[in-house]
Image (cartoon, one colour):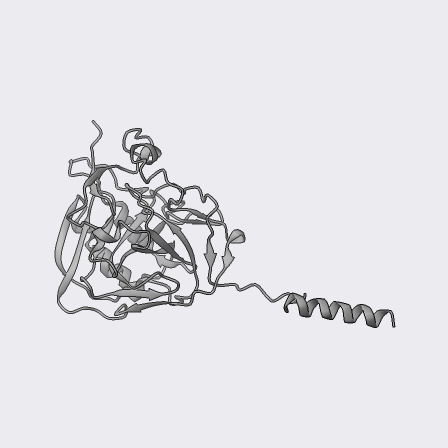
Length: 313
């Protein structure tokens, strides 16, 4: 019998006021798999601003949004502050409450950095939720952040500007990122669904992100898990970060239930969703100024008239 998995509506977030829903990532499951989310949870999973998406860079539009500005991202809080676990859908890390924040970069407010979690594939040919120019990456890290204008994350989930998600695409590399290793090392303790509490943070979250905070893609979207609320301002960094084969093996070793022969927790990514005429902005590769007239229409017309006058006199 198919094991039914319960999880709160935001992967990696567990606000007490949210009702649990049943789903999984198995493409062959016609009751709880991604192919039926848009009908089973059609209030929002069938919306027009769903995530993730495919990013075709040739169709993105340049927009100067400035850099994302984090508070305390380069610091390590004192004491045992982390909650780390396998929640049957992902490996996720809850951070110290109200310690990290992010604003700027065109975000609609200041956001508490609440948690981060991972999506990964069965092999290196897939795993990231967002794809870029038809390329799939082996994994993707998501920071989940809620707007401080609301009293808590449960309230933020009710508003279009409530959540800011930051995506870091992970690419296979040979050099181990010590910060990533410091968070992933606990995977061996949560092979089966389990929570670890009061874990000391030893590395900054800044080292999980590209150094260039100004180069990213931006679009309006949704949570990538049921019930897929369309309340997310998405940021996907242009630059990838490395993850080693050994680190991916740690993620792929997780199981999605407590059975002796638990099903491997792999391919934990929702298929890309239709763009539906949404704009995808990029904050890098500013188009060059053309050699044509770039002044006001009146001045341009005057210049043209003077040129024609000079030609015939």
